Image (cartoon, rainbow, N blue to C red):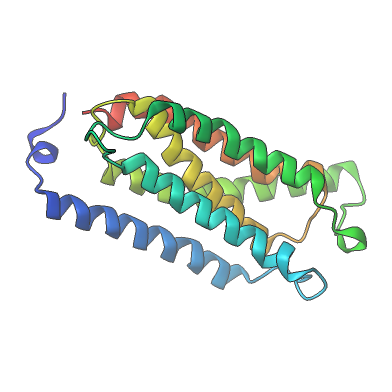
Length: 206
């Protein structure tokens, strides 16, 4: 049952809290990249791959977030069909783009299975950490915000945070092996999407 504190927030207070969550999330992502640095091979890669691809993921994430919080024409939120399609299509596009884009000889490939799994685990943990803070902030800012379709809209919120995390780790991680990107960058994206769907009904539903 929603608490009185969350029920009694005014629309302007809710808007300010949501914007604060977005700003803090952006500062978190940018601060980590500022601390860890850009990938060392970015000068050898095409601008489209090194910076264009993460830019597309950031924009897609913001679009998904705006869809999730939209009231829709009737005031009942976005159309569930579009929400479900977005939840299915965006991860699929991530997988297809990873399989399709080839970066040639610039891949920093781990030389042994042990090194490869160490890179998978380390990068996956960092990607999950990148997405976890914005995800937690989004849950706080959007608590009891969705009267309908809370599960699907929660999945959208998780997908948004997962895309932001995947885009940020792309700017830092020099490993371009397909399996690494799918597991270590895409795995947390999928995990946050599923977690958003699971928590949507419990936390985000009015």
